[in-house]
Length: 432
Ligand code: 4AD
Ligand code: MG
Image (cartoon, rainbow, N blue to C red; front, top):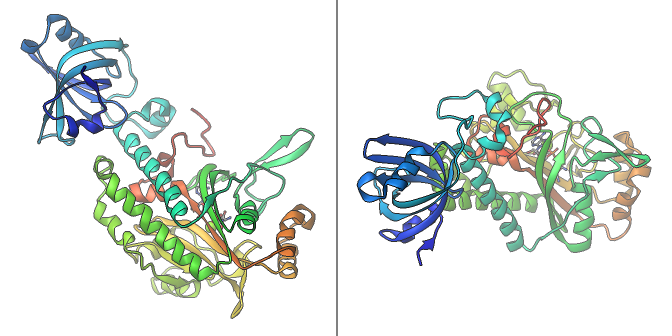
């Protein structure tokens, strides 16, 4: 029997007769020969139908195909050095499943709003295909990395009663006869997990009512948040470095085809795989901005252009460490050597991408964190279970959060984060 294969496995079936199920992305014909551009969700390649090699019916069927027609085909795989993909199929038979006219996304240039309105179809095109494949590899690489490091995945809830990262960007919802918020971060629950199971990571959707239109903010995005009991900030930075090096290497090993579809130069990602990320203090980062002629005061938080400027000085991610306490959340541990700053770090990705991860050592002393809660104007009652973690078995611990779409945008070199998630949610977009 002829084997049913996917396009990505072509190389194992050169000169063999195979079956496939495919969709048509484009068609070109010149009298006696029809070139079909095909996709099957695993890759894109070309099928060739020659009038002299097939029955009249098959040739007519091939001629009748519209964009996004779906069909079964039988044919023989050949090497094709001229093509992007390296293989093509000489078609001997095809059987149409669906063949309708009028697919809205053609091969001409479309505006971004049109494409986003048709995201349910646009996802089939080469560029979204490549990004989603890389997203998938990054997801698996993340899970594998933390499993190898002895972590377990631990799920935080999405309906929340209180707000870990401050109250300004909360999505409010009714929850029966009380109020609830959508999670902005799973961290506080991750800290529960760390005291229960040692090393955990959460990975799921988080929500922020971001009202500004920027290239790097979604209202719904995926965050991965590891939390490590008995770990100080320096070891957490080592872990973060190993993590980014590992996942980048996985993309380079497994996604050369996808990177080439995106015209992404893989060489730009190589330094990251070596680790050795600079640990730049907030104070030195401020100096760097001022020396670069930027108008920036000590104590301010970095804006996107500031982060871009800093990250452009490096060929791999850079840690900016120890920010002033006034611009970071209450749960961080103060630097014993300088109580004006926290033991924290943001990771800025190169090529101007800016913050992709952020984390800190956590304050583990009961009285100190209670004071920091009060200072932040938060209600102790909402955090009573969190304070229990400092009462019973409290230990030094650290953690961080990775913005998954931020990392994807950098790895794929996207102009805008909206392309990093299948169905972006932004202030002006809730559909499809
Ligand atoms: O820096 P953030 O706010 O940190 C936290 O939420 C901590 N609780 C993390 C932790 O220590 N466990 O968010 C973490 C990351 C940022 O570095 C950024 O990459 C991403 O989440 N992020 C966003 N990504 C897309 N759209 C948004 N609106 C984002 N806001 C934050
Ligand atoms: Mg942050």
